[in-house]
Image (cartoon, rainbow, N blue to C red; front, side, top):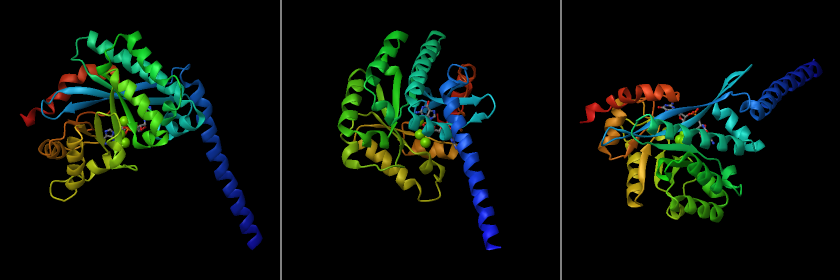
Length: 285
Ligand code: C2E
Ligand code: MG
Ligand code: MG
Ligand code: MG
């Protein structure tokens, strides 16, 4: 009896592993072909200046619809892209597409916006990353101040000296640099000060629990104070409720981003909804 149970258990385990490996393998395989097959798309989510109420930027977020598996979340495939090295191709594709889109909106008559692109630590390990970024800006004829790179704390922790050097070149060229998901990783105050960056983006987890009736606001207030004292601007991500906007306005946060304004949407939808999104800030004036 014991033996039988053990065997069943083993078979069950083996089957689970198989399902897991198969999905993982299909994603790995699919990632390599996804670009040629036209399965990748970019969606854009606005960032709003909390004082003026104007949209000042957008974050580009990749979307993948696999022919058989359907929509796959970046939370699932980005780590796989990083492990397999496909991220290098992915980032280049996103950078080029996002910069072209940003230029196109300018030509369509939208106010000039800062385009934010998420960058992986793997990208910073490649030798041609900085040249690629600057090459895209030249090719697209987009001013460098209309591009921002979002990096996480773990990116900068990997090859500190080398990364600082690369960030400095990009910063000197006029590209903006932001620390994404700030507060969620291993923030070290001593080295944040050494990084050539412009912005801290407060992690969504701190915004989620933000409620004027509780003391949760103290962490957000501390990050805003830290940013100001380092002369950095500060953005809150994951803003879903009007009360959160009001509180962040009171706390003098610079920019807000989240479902309250808009989910990430296609370029066409963003162009159409631009003014409607800004109307959501009219209560502030
Ligand atoms: P992230 O860079 O921190 O992006 C913010 C994520 O939060 C996005 O999820 C966005 O859709 C979601 N979000 C925005 N506002 C709200 C809100 O109000 N409430 C909630 N619950 N969620 C909100 P998404 O698009 O699924 O992306 C997840 C992560 O995948 C990103 O986190 C980023 O780390 C990575 N990612 C996405 N696109 C790219 C890309 O093009 N390149 C790289 N390297 N990573 C990417
Ligand atoms: Mg981001
Ligand atoms: Mg983030
Ligand atoms: Mg995040």
